[in-house]
Every structure is written in C-alpha cells, then in structure tokens.
Image (tube, one colour):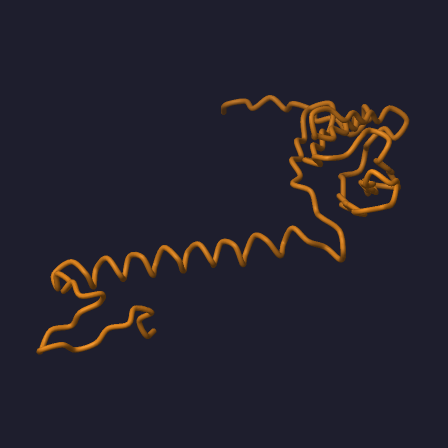
Length: 162
C-alpha cells in the first residue's frame, strides 16, 4: 500500500512538513496505525450489513432456553407497545414493528417524514404452549416469554456409578 503522506526528498533526507521522522520509530507507528484502521473497517463491514434485511432494521436478539420456558429478548428502541406485531405459527416466532413519524412546521405543513420498520423470525423447538405466550415492551426491549408444554420440559436423569 502506498503512503498517504506527501513525502519528498530534500538534501538527502525524507521530510514531511519540514520535520524529519525518527527512522527507528516511524515505520512501526505507521504500520500499527494502518493495522488499526484495517481492523476498524473490517469490523464495520462485517457488522453493519448484517443488521439490515431488505429495507428494515434487524434487531439484536437474545434467546434463552430455560427449564420451563423460552425467553426471546429483542432490542427495539424507538417504538411503542402498539407498534409491534408478534405472531407464533407452528414453531416459528415472527416479530414485526412499524412506526411512522411526521414532524410539522409552524404552518402545519409536513416538514419531515420518517418510517422505521423491523422484522425478525425465530425458529423455536417443538413443545411451546401457544396459549400462554406473553409479550412485554419496556425501555426499548421487547421480551417474549414462551412457556413449554409439560411434555417438552427437560427431565433430569440420575447418573449412577458402577
């Protein structure tokens, strides 16, 4: 990779902006700086596109499989409880949210219009009791609790020594 600094030769020494670099430190510092920028851009390129799906924002999900229930937490800031559409079909949990905001100026004319949509679908194990599903939204986090049926709950098996 070529350097971004405008180096030029003056009287046999490399200079940038009039100050000669310390040759024992500069290549190492430039290499470290370049490595840090490479890592930063790799993380950004890896993480940011994964958050978009179609034209909507994907949530950060946290799924916990406990003994008697499955809990799904979705970070969804900027919504209200009425903006959500939570559906359970067979063993698929579908989370949707849509919100439209419009700001008006002093004359009542629309000045800015913004639409925010989220969508996520989660495949669940068999044995969720669909009649007892509970969904709550508080402080930007949607929490869906899906109780398991008695047949789907884990059974402890005693281990015996021989």
